[in-house]
Amino acid sequence: MSSKLTLLVVQAVILFPALLWKSYQLTRAPRDVARWMVTACLACFAAAYPLGLLAGDVNQPDPGRIVPLLFQHVFLCGLVFSLACFFLFSALPPARARRRALVEAAPLGTAILVMATVTVLVPDVPPAQYPRSAVSVFYLAADLYLTYGIASACFFARRYARGAAPRLARGLTVASVGFAIGALGGATLIAVVLVHWAGAAIPRLLVQATVWLVFPSAILLVVGLSYPGVATRLAAARVWWQHLRTYHRLRPLWTKLHEAFPEDALSRTPLGRWDALSVLGVHRRYYRRVIECRDGLVRLSPYVARSEDPLPDRLTAALRAHARREQVPEEPMPIAVPDGGSLDDDARELVTLSESLTG
Image (cartoon, rainbow, N blue to C red; front, side, top):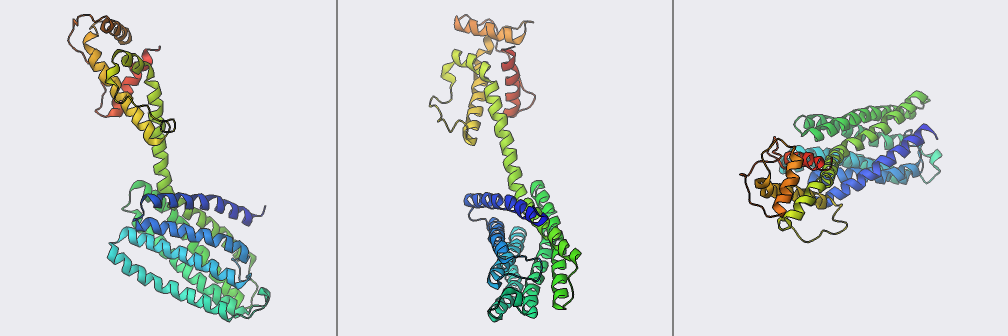
């Protein structure tokens, strides 16, 4: 597999899942203009990808058919424009962002107009016989706008990252590196076009530089824009896993207390099979189990003797005393008191107690 094909495969593997993810996020917040812009950016990238394969080598002014090239570059320009709008609508008030977006649309429209004009005027001949000047003007219009837009996006990303939340700041930093590499790649593409227009031989090193700059920059762009959402979901997954494990680790303590105080159950309606593994289902079970364990310990605490015996032994004896309905000889005493005031702090103490009952 050639190096270019490898980069294309890696790009596709990262791009299309990222587009699906952003589309899903968009359904959760359809009024978020900035999220619309990110989704549009990835959609344009996804649309340009197969057109690029159909059009041929887009990193040299030696094109395939002009029509696929036109649509590919329109989508690429739309990608860059969407990026600019993303930063504008994220960092500026809506009215000011709209005005600035209209300003940014002027160079976009100019580039598309030039490319469309060349497409209409180019003679109907095989691609190898396209006039050199037409091919050069086409690529020059596209590459000048792409380089301008990517450089602007790099500036906006670095500026916006300074005041952003940590995860978003890290994602924007990664994306800004991709933008910087992409702008450098755009400059090499412009150099290739100018050399070709002049009729000189294009240095092989210059052609390779466009591949090793443009494609990695695209990968960094997708990773950077997807990072905040992915990192948030990974953090949520860690919490989900922690709650699921805690729920099961509390089973020994909960079982004993539930047998003694069945009326303390917060809900007698069983959850569905799939709800038991869903995000909300696991959290609900976790919260209920922690609260039910604490309520049971509060009710059992008067039966727990103040002695030097280990707490698990005293707890077992207290359960037997409660079952026999013995008189309570002691005042209530605190059991498994957490250091902090959060539910998770309480859960950690209860887990320690629960696991001691099985030791």
